[in-house]
Image (cartoon, rainbow, N blue to C red; front, side):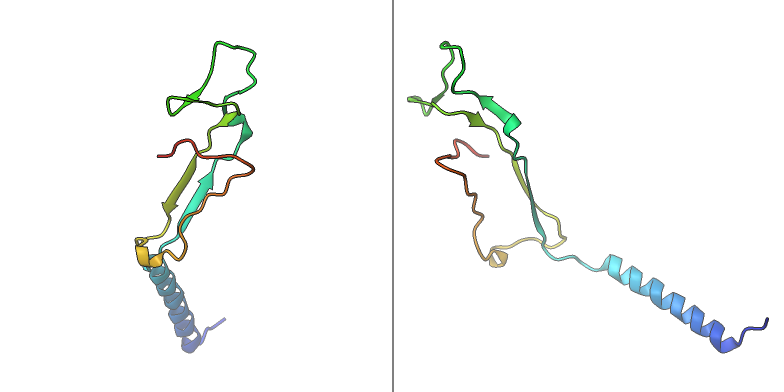
Length: 108
């Protein structure tokens, strides 16, 4: 079976084109990609308000005795892209919405 030179050159140019396209795709810069993960798990209870022990009370801001369960929730936010996120890129500020009468006691 004899292959025509034109077919061989077409195959070679096609392979080179696919390889070059893949290389340029991998080298291209990704934009800013904000990503977050929330560890929203009720098993992270750190203080139970209805504890059977009267010896333990949780006090907030030196005077407020907390009377509800306290949960720990960790939220990770990062930029998964290659370009920085600038103030001009932010259309709306980050908003955390809590259920019911919950509130954030502390954050870092």
